[in-house]
Length: 256
Image 1 (tube, helix red, strand yellow):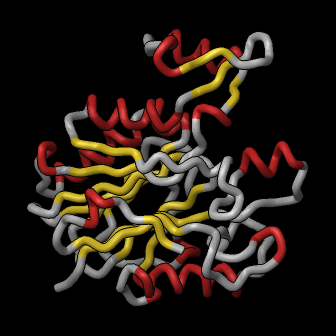
Image 2 (cartoon, helix red, strand yellow):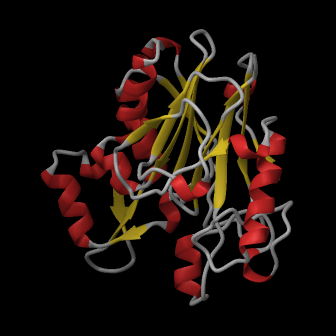
């Protein structure tokens, strides 16, 4: 049910996890820990699944906060919990308040969890290609620094993400990166289809984190390739399925 980072697990006062599709109450193609209110799953199932995640990271169920994610570089500072109906439009959260769990939703995009155990500041970011490209990771780090962190004390871990072996993109995608001055040869490999390429999203995320001056690691898990444990938007699309479930990544500071 839970994947944890050895790096973050070694930090005192931090609870975290990337939650797989196992251990919930949903059925059918959502089986079983679907946390996506945007899916067509029964809302009561999603609510219970999210509650189980709050339990697992040791916070009251109403103190798991999430976002209305829009593939932006925008970050929210969580100072008190809010209802799902009031989710702000953003793609990352930070806090220094114990007992609030920061959650982001994923089904191939990069779920990055951040922690500074010294300053007791945490963060969580949803980093798809667009968010990473436009700076959501750097914005999360900046927001943590504004709360008292030092870059050298921040640790970040990337959880289950679609791998380069499964992420084919079109020529316009490569052009966008080339025009921005990115190292095309580093992030793209030839595809079997003419004009297409395979994009290394996990590698690109780790590069952006390290370039921003923090220590980062990749758990090396592919959402597309492990259907037993992970939902995948791309796998759903290629298989012609009607919908897909979503995972949550969550992190919290222990009280008081």
